[in-house]
Image 1 (cartoon, rainbow, N blue to C red):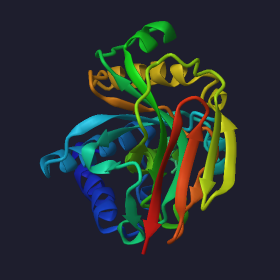
Image 2 (image 1 turned 30 degrees about the horizontal axis):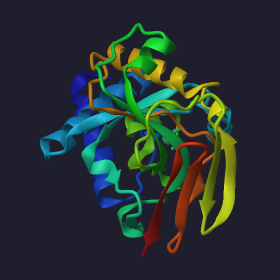
Image 3 (image 1 turned 90 degrees about the vertical axis):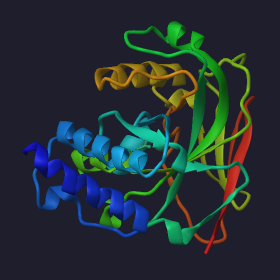
Image 4 (image 1 turned 90 degrees about the horizontal axis):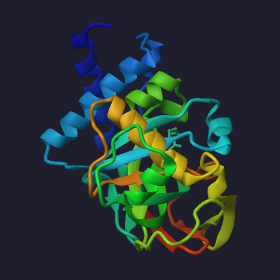
Length: 257
Ligand code: 0L1
Ligand code: MG
């Protein structure tokens, strides 16, 4: 694929996200590699930045076995976060702004120092200012939430919203914290932070590696979403969604029509 082919595909995924309208998978009509998917992703984020949004970090995807099995993909992926994706803790989102949103329980890192690869897990954790319970709202722009690896990368790894709870100091051992995703008070997914690559710190190392390789090392003040600890749950109007992470606390949001 030549470079001029990137811009229209970036416009297609960006417009689909803005209008909350499903589109066919790119790979149905155009053969793309995962690397070209990342080029499309980068170009779609530039469109958001041109509209005034600000980069605030990185999300890691497919960092747990449960997510890989749910989506039938077995490679780690990463996406770019902007401030336009922030949903405040306790806020309501409107279903009208999404195609078919899902929620997954995560842990978020806030960096106090820049982080460029190569780094060890200990070095990565030393750059962390705080950690928080978090929920990622993913919303594939592709019809029926179906995609290839390259498709999902082009669609910024389904990034749509991040809900981050109160930041906590990094005292807790993050390796095996219980995590419960509830909808309307009923537990729907129960997992452990250990499901995130065995230790969420490894996800931070991977975020540093992948973003450095892309020429965008992690910056001080950025958020890194470590990836879902369980499969994602589809959302419906009227839902109140809450993630409770042992020792870190809770975070939640609701869904209106
Ligand atoms: O783990 C993730 O956040 C992957 C998101 C991309 C795939 C999906 O939409 O489930
Ligand atoms: Mg996620």
